[in-house]
Image 1 (cartoon, helix red, strand yellow):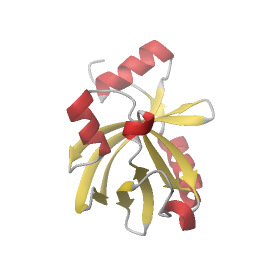
Image 2 (cartoon, one colour; image 1 turned 120 degrees about the vertical axis):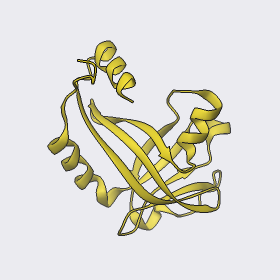
Image 3 (cartoon, helix red, strand yellow; image 1 turned 180 degrees about the horizontal axis):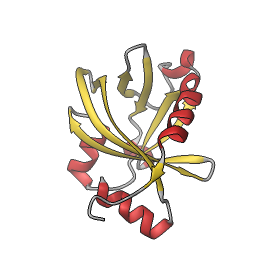
Image 4 (cartoon, rainbow, N blue to C red; image 1 turned 90 degrees about the horizontal axis):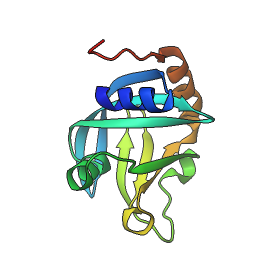
Length: 145
């Protein structure tokens, strides 16, 4: 992840990043597991760029990296909790993520049709997420600096 952040910093001027390791309960393609990943977040206009480095467990990120290498594999949207896990007519949910409190995100199996996965994140957590990024974002210093 450090090299990837460095590329975004040098190419696009994305100098400030918040990085953390997450351990969550997840269900991927029907199998429940503990998932560990490292996430890097940077403000990009009105949104965020998220980098994902899988550490343990299977997820859309591990599948994408294994099959295609590095690259953009999902786009995320905030959605109300009561709609988060609701079925949609054209896409099945194949990845669910829980934290210590409740379901926080789902991925739709849209890769074949759209070329990327669609992620819905619990809208009620948007403020917490924005506050965390604002509090922890720091100018990036490469480990080799």
